[in-house]
Amino acid sequence: MLGFRAILTSAVILWVAALSDAETRPNVVLILIDDMGWGDFSCFGNAAAKTPHIDRLAKEGMVFEQFYVNSPICSPSRVAISTGTRNQETVFSAMDLVPSLMKLGGAIRPTSLDGEDMHQVLLGKSKDPRKQPLFFSCPPDRKNYYGLENLPDLAMREGQWKLLCDYDGSRPLLYDLSKDPGEANDLTENHKDRVLSMSKRLVEWYCKVTPE
Image (cartoon, rainbow, N blue to C red):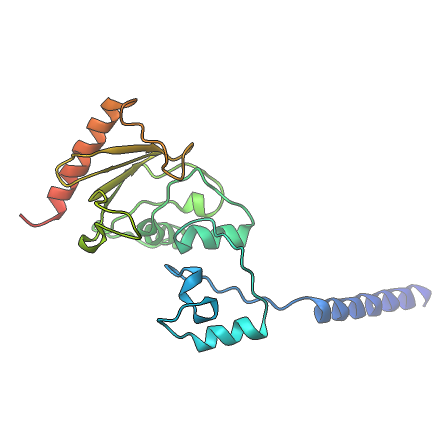
């Protein structure tokens, strides 16, 4: 009988502790939005657009003015938030997300689907970067942007290296993002062979994906 009472008493104590913990635990809803800067909300000073519902959340909740996400895109940022870790070594593209999820779900991948299977990275079991380089073409209206004039037309990311150049391969800029994420030090003079190889492939890619 004493054993039963001890078990019952312990159960009640644990139950009360759980209730107390639930009452004091904060209720946090984290909303992660792609391509949304801190100054896009009217509660942070945007006069061109009104965001009354977000403003209300800010007014009734708590506002943090210093917040940084793991990546410019949502997929690795969500993984960083859910796992509590950050990976600045792996090159991951948004188009890699679908084939990675298809692999995790056991779905058959269409041969026409772009992107690479990076599911081991999403699970935190690997830091290996994608095998193929990433190519970018800047929008025509972004030649001058945020005070910067005559920006390069094309960009390429291959491992730690990022190259920028114009449509014809001229005006190349090369950065080692592992040491210079802010792209402050141009290394074209130190790695001329790499610049030639990357700019050639970048221009070839652009000619292939754009109409004659």
